[in-house]
Length: 278
Image (cartoon, rainbow, N blue to C red; front, side, top):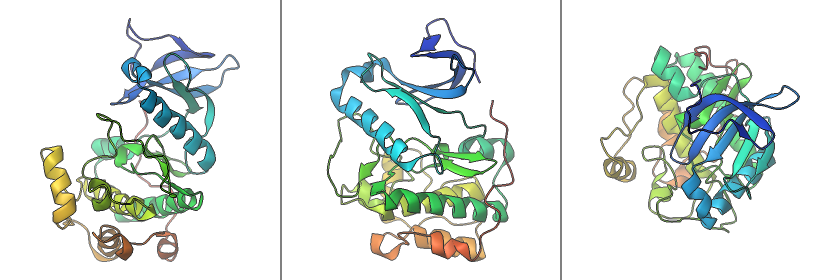
């Protein structure tokens, strides 16, 4: 956690802010505390996005999607104000690092932990898809490792599988290069199979410390995802087979739900190598 700087808020809604947990292209996340002493994570969008009505619509959908999924597979939403001058949402604080932070600090996860991670994420995505949602931005920084298993966060670009409500304003990312599926990059219909592709990419990162489609620029990454085969060096046996199946170019060839396939191999859900959140 980083201390608040002079230009940062000290309170949002009813929550007192204690420090900054992180920041990204869309906003910043702070550690906050309610009047009753509950610790929360407060996400505040960057002020310039607050002027964009289409972005506000995205933010409302993030809150709605996270509420629909509930607390089993994501940090539960406790409070939100999408209509505030600067929109914000408060979720339960999760005491666990992102997969990105854990791999950066301790290196790739051992195979049994990758299997456990895959089992938990497969169940989470199955639950998301059963609600008629597609996450559309499954990547290491959106996976939190907790004592109870992995949690998915940031449903900011989730959409309903019925294909309604397409929000693609200029300058707002529709996913993360290197983890998006080929059909998502090409602007084709996106189903739960897109999340399965991203799951495969996340598992490769967890097992090797590198994404399956390395590159120095977004353009290079997008090209490789569409045209090249994934780099699976460092993966062996069933993990290699599982990742390769998830990363098939054809959505129909992927597992729409990997849950049943993981069940037979499933180790304890919680990845064993975790780093404390700072």
